[in-house]
Image (cartoon, rainbow, N blue to C red; front, side, top):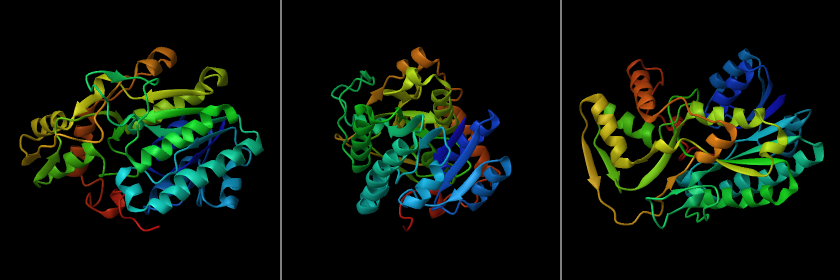
Length: 323
């Protein structure tokens, strides 16, 4: 299969590209390299990927990315609540306008399948966090980022394209393009560095998934017969990977044997939810290979080996990078 990955030099995208190449697929990457990932792009090129440095907002770049492709994995986005809130106009251009244009372009080229990266943040705040939400649960997004993802899901699931929507849990772990603005990675970095970690709303729940397992979820969907996944939504993660922030802190400090933590109690958080990942397990046989303690270990090992460069560099965060 010839697969185009938008955002293919990003946190999930680069890992996915590597996995697909290893499985024998042809891979084309479209990425702006907004976070300075030239080394990531070069490494993917050396592995055999076709790397296009371009912007999903640009019609010519979209056409180049889609030409001759069998499948599209659309990861390119302004990702995360803080990044979208900081630059709402750019988020709308990328996450909505460019995505709708890309879907239209894909229809015109007769693309066989689309995998759209969505988010479990679509569930917002659960009425009862003790109940794990499945794909049929109401979507109550409380952030611009999640609202935009819900909007695109509705378009894709209307039947206009052979699409599958994947709602990823919050991702963690070491990636080729490293991010330290994600909860597990950020908490581990700060506690390892001996910084005071302020944790707001330590009792609120979120689901988590390792970056390599997030990529494996995409690869698994691509390996399925189109009729098995077309028009479907799958949560991507594992049901035993629902944690409160306090749970995460306890695991990290136990691993480090130290940690300076201040809990700032909040009685109200706009997002508080647990998620069920039974459907993707039961229907597609998806089973993540890694768990949060594995991610904590590899982050600490990478920090101690200085594999991430400066872990506090703005390039390791999606927040505040100029357009």
